[in-house]
Amino acid sequence: MASLTHPSLQAPASTTPWAWAVWSLLLGVALATLVYAPARWLQHAVLSVSGGQVVLDDSRGTVWQGSAQLALAGGAGSHGMVRLPGRVQWQIQPGLRSLSVRLRADCCTEQAQVLELRPGWGQWSLQVQPGQSHWPAEVLAGLGTPWNTVQLRGNLLLSTSGLRVVSALQRVQLEGGLTLDLPRLSSRLSTLQPLGSYQLRLTGGEPARLELRTLQGSLQLQGQGQWTAGRLHFEGAAQADAAHEAELSNLLNIMGRRDGARSVITLG
Image (cartoon, rainbow, N blue to C red; front, side, top):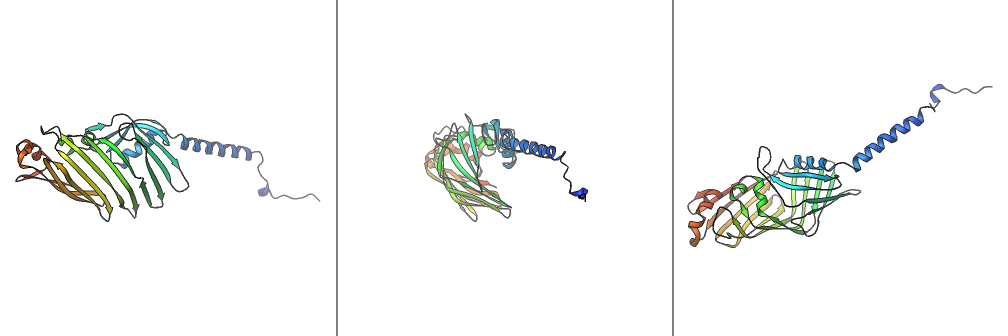
């Protein structure tokens, strides 16, 4: 007796190899696109996440390993932009649960700064390994007011100590801290050189706190602030010592609202 085979159980042998070929081609294209994703994709992502304040210009390479020229801008509607000398290189290595990022700037880092990004459902964390880097104060002018008015000059020493940024439930929390030392800082608006040496310290917590203090100098700066709901709220004051009030009067008028001999500084 001849065996019977149901039509629905017969494999379309002639079309199966073609189907596998198409799927293999699509998978290959997807993998190639992922592996060789151009660096300009990262350039657009950084611009969007930073609100237009961090610019990666003239990007080269891929998303995973490349370089660009770093610039700071004032965000949407801003017309000023200040570029760092040299280029910034990055290397991103994906792991099972995290992305390891190595950053190095020609002008400002002796060793690569290492970051670990851990994405998750509705949350993410960014761990910054301890390190130091030197940055020109002039680059701050790219962020707009008040930096582009004061026109600071000098070197900024940035030190991180286990800084961790955690985002969950649409809230961002800082843990650890960082310190920004501003030794022998000066301004193009003052003939008094230097103005002084200062320290800015960010301490994580709920909320994160910011403290500005004067280490030494004729221009006394102090202030405190908090980082809440993704925004910085800072209140401080600037005041000249008795021997240099005349030399610093114009600078104090520009830095904030005058209140007698002081200039009140408010951000956020």
